[in-house]
Length: 248
Length: 248
Image: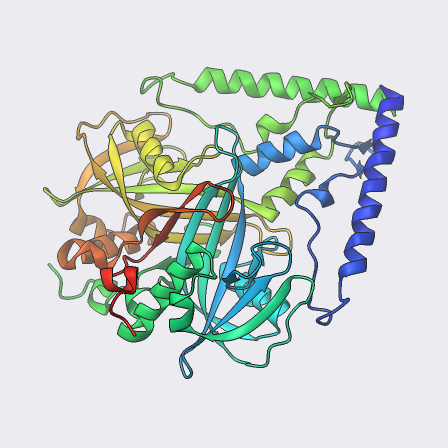
């Protein structure tokens, strides 16, 4: 088993070096240091590691193990619908590598321990150069990429963001185009994904009839016993239900 | 490195056997076969595995690797707020091992590839014996158990469920008590967690003024290119915004 382990260790280390080169080669090549290229999912995990007994462990069956873990848990992706209420325009991008000519909201994967709104704001900035602020959670999508018992689950959350800057400086590794588009145009165009179209129409409804109709707002509440806080998202609660005063 | 690997392999296999025994010892001991005891997170992952080169791989640095993966992804927990509109009563439980005397909604972890609503319905049945049907997504909670760069994220989703059966047969491993409680009592009691109290008040608002005020409803939409479908949750969209007919 020793030669096999050593061989696999070399392979793992080589793959890690290649991943690292690929990563550094793309990082910051355009769009400034914030413009980041993400390696394929799991590439970072195939490596030799020091264990607590002082040895080196390499997971040969990495792919299967990752699939199981991904299935038990799941990835959290965020999209930011950056809407400018003053102009009625929404920030949209076209992917460089997939879904060409399809307008969509900028976004990406959460970092470890990162809050929903923080991911959306960070990813929008990295991809488009636009600074923004979290306003609400608009929609949640669940998809099983591989249907069946060990199908990998994927969770996409779309947030409403308010822009604080307006000059686009988009990441050319990730995006082919980036624009401020009339929200009503996005709601009608065919050059978009079904989910983008649906959320554009949802936003239009909120823009015309009040965002309270569509928003899950966020509040921080204390956790029981731990002394920590958590963030809770739901429809805004009227004041009398919030305090329960004067209610039978 | 060989003796270390072999020793660790023995340890890993032993731990796996212990985990399996623990699991089989608790499963189904009361509350019927649906009443299940979950092993600690990650216990299933510490084991030797055949890899594609014909060797056996054991991840000694399992704990660290799991933490990283858990941080990059996250666990999905579901709670089911089973509310009976005919009686105004809500299904609540008290945990056997933690948060004693605190009423909360039944729930638990998603299985691989399982939809949000399906998890809530299954966990409610396993924990309380009550059969129910998914109606809407009410709230989403994000908490970082260990704050910091590698803090593990946790996502709790609370669904509104409609009961189809009413005779409680609760899992005595998980619950100390299980009751149908007046929703207005749950909204006022101090013997509950802040999140349960908040969602009880949200439900009361929906019960009295229309569930359309609080629900994220679900719809299935086609994914682009893959030919698969996904489930999308957001506030109900009025018909004219849905079709965009007659809108400028």
